[in-house]
Image (cartoon, helix red, strand yellow):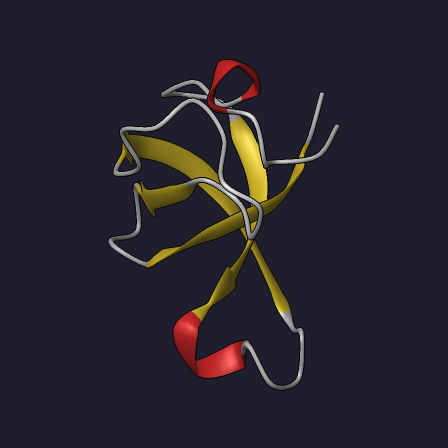
Length: 64
């Protein structure tokens, strides 16, 4: 599932995000969502979240 729809992203869910520093390379970081930072229902680049590790980035993939 893609991370462009807020309805697909939930606190406690496992996701892969791209960190700001990794946007050029596209390197993904996997983790658990602690907080959803994007308030809109849709964002073309991915919903911005904070992981339980404290890292902030945009969701590229929602894992099952």
